Amino acid sequence: MLVLSGCLDRSLTFQIRFTELNGLQQGNRVLFQNNHIGEVVKVNYTDTGDYLVTVTILPDFTNATTKDSTFHIGIDSDAPPAKAVFVEQAKPGGDLLKKGAIVSGTQKAGYFDDLIKDLTEKAETAETEFRKSLKDWEESLSTQSQELNQSLNKTLEELSRQFGSIKDEVQNVPNREEVKELEKNIQEFVEDFNNAQKDVQDKLKNEVIPQLKMELEKLREQLKREGREEELEKIDEEMNEGIAI
Image (cartoon, rainbow, N blue to C red; front, side, top):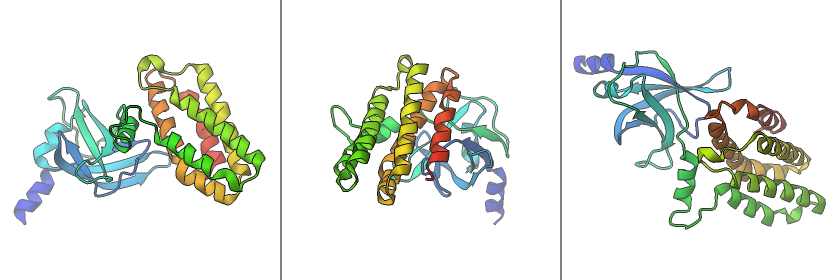
């Protein structure tokens, strides 16, 4: 008991702020260089619309969590599809985080692409899950009115085209006019969603909207590199106010 108590006393507990959880849950692991160094002990949704993830780091690995460390959520390869918090160090050493500290998490560049790569492994040109959802969607539209079908098809095809042109490379970050065009198509999508029957809305919520939100998060990370993330504010409003997920 004394040994266990001493171990707990020397462990490090702090919080990481994330804008999205991507499926992270209490009890998931914290990993550093493929080592299990701690676990998620609590997840809280804040009144500012983000998440505070409380983690505890084992005493032998507290040197991995410094002010220069970065934290992102990814797939735990030892227990898929469970998620894990990954710790990376830009450089060794540095000031250690203090117990109770709050740090900002990041979304690892290429996270969504890695997920798609897993789903379409060995494919020469990976078709995103978003595009696959659209194909499945088009095949199921026959039960709805022809006018609504055409409107939804047109809007979704245009969104697919826009996201398909957005790559991870910094030089391909969309310009302001392209973001405005995306905003317009999101507005049309929300309008079509609200005009659809409930079974159509449910299908969109389950198969299309989650992938759409993931694509928007990837775009948000691209815009952050140029300090332009505020350009997505109206799109966020449309999605949050127009569609109850």
